Each structure stands twice: as C-alpha cells, then as structure tokens.
Length: 252
Image (cartoon, rainbow, N blue to C red):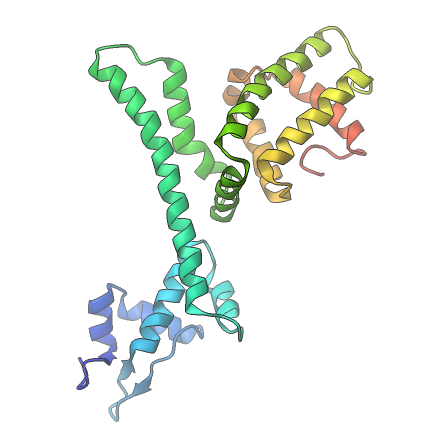
C-alpha cells in the first residue's frame, strides 16, 4: 500500500480486488484503465478514482457489454459511475427474479418428493425449461428486456396470456383440420391474434422475435407439449406471412 493509504501499487490492487495483474495490464492496453501515476521505478499506482473506474468496467461487463462497447461508453462525456452501477443493479435484480421463479418450481418438486409423491412429468418439464430454455436461446440483453416486459405487463396479464395461448392453438388446429385456407378470414383472425400475443411477449423487439422463433423450431418437444405439431406450425406460419405482407412472425 502506498504511503497515504489511498493509493495501491498494481500488485496490492490485484490482491485487494481479486482481479489479476494481467487483467489490470490488459485493461490499460485496450484503453479502459490507466494508473493514476507511475513511480520513479516505473511501477503503476492506482487511486480511488481508478477503483471507481474498475467498478464501472465490472458492472458493465456484468450486463453483457463487450470491452469495446464499455470503452466507447466510458469515453462519452455524459458517462457516469452512477449509470454503470444502476445498470448492474437492475441486472442483479433481474437475476434474483429469475432465481426466485426457479426456486418456486424447485420447491414444488421438492415438496412432492418429501411427501413421497410422484413428481409429475409436467412439473419436471417446466422446471427444466425454466432452468435451460431462457439462457439457451436468449442472450443477456434479451433476458434483461424480457424481465422488463414482465414487469411492464404485470403478473395478472401474464396469467391471462398463458391461458389464451392453448385456446388459440386449439382454435388454429381445428381450423387446419377443417381445411380452412391460410388466406381465409378465419385463419387471418387467428394469425392477427397470434402475432399480437407474440408482440406482447417480445415488446416488438426483432432480436427477441428471432430467438423465440429459433426456440420453437429447435425444440419440437416444447412445441408438441403446447399442442403444436410441424403441420400446424407451418399452417399458422403461412397465415402469418399472408397477414404480415409476406414476412413471417420474426419479420423475415
């Protein structure tokens, strides 16, 4: 520790923060962090200002930003430590919310096991989905947006939408089985409501639309559990393309 107890040589800073000397050197090399000064012997020395800079870097990394993006953001005149901390805080809260939802599912499974009851396949599937699907198909920024959508929409509306989907899928299947053409007003009504529910989930974000589409196309078991077989998926897709001017539900 340097003589005024508020300055750290690079090795001291590495030990105090748990960040390696190599990483601190790399931050300097890519233009993210500069030492406050150097000693006559050439040793790097860091102060409280640099500590705050490190916190900004770590906070922005935690919300999924690349080092290049962080460098560009911190170079802006309006960049502030508070902005980085608030972004990190929001993400931390989202992670807590995600874990709380998983806790609810795991508690349900644990309760059944403690009682010696058989855990339903549905509960196990939903627990696995909650654990895997979101991280598999949505990147960190998209997960952040989805959590914000959940807050904006509200739990009551979410429950309403969860009840609406099976009914809409069943209606679409019945229409297909009856041979209703995708261009028919009946299927077009289904397509419009389908797209409206998707937009409500995604907030109109194209990237989330695309990730959602990949998940449904790549997880046939997920689609089947929700009453969607490949034929129905294609039939609804054709109706959506007609309603959407030739584009599918991802906007392509």
